[in-house]
Amino acid sequence: MQKEEIQIWKTARENVFLLNGKDVSPPDGWIFIPSGDPGLTRRLKNSGDYWVLVHRRKNRIESLGLWADGVRADDVKARLEAERSDPAYRRKLDSARKTRAAKQDAYIVEFRQAVVDFLAFAPCYKEFAWSLADAVTDQAVPVGSGTVARTERIPLVRRAEAAVIAWMRHQTTAYDHMAIARVKGERREVRRRLAERSRQLLSKYRSGEKIDPASCPLAGALK
Image (cartoon, rainbow, N blue to C red; front, side, top):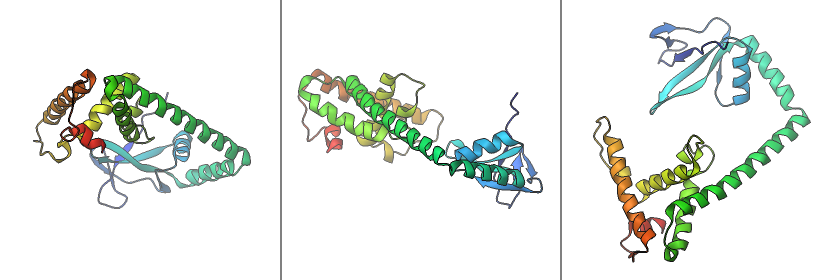
């Protein structure tokens, strides 16, 4: 049975942290290993006791690194470095990179098509639909972007819809400059209203309605 992870919170004091509201300091001989090497972090967690140093960044908890026994950490680092210096490891790493790149390229094509399918513009706006799909895809699918397009928890068609609405919210409305009251649910309500406005605009392109590019916020954004 996996033991519960211990999270300590950063404070302004050196080597003093908060654990369940109380001041704690790492045991003698422990050292701090910053985040940034997932392989090292994973092995340290599997090798013995550790603390995770966290802080709050925006609306989420973010790990800054681990505190762990220094002798054990040095041993884990040495063994990992020896493994990584092996030519076989390099070949495996290169192969994995190529596989990920190929998978990403395939997803770009798949996502772009899903965006076009969601837009379902009239034939007279088909070329415009592809241009919009390019813009949305460029923003939404890069690895590490943290957008809804990167999650597999929802179907592709819903990812495409959410990405289009998010792109339009930032590119065709004044959302980024709005002063939104700090009231629970207010930001969600603003997003809902803007999304409805975006869907109304999209419906004009779907019906083939004649649109003046000079006054259309969507056409203006794509310029």
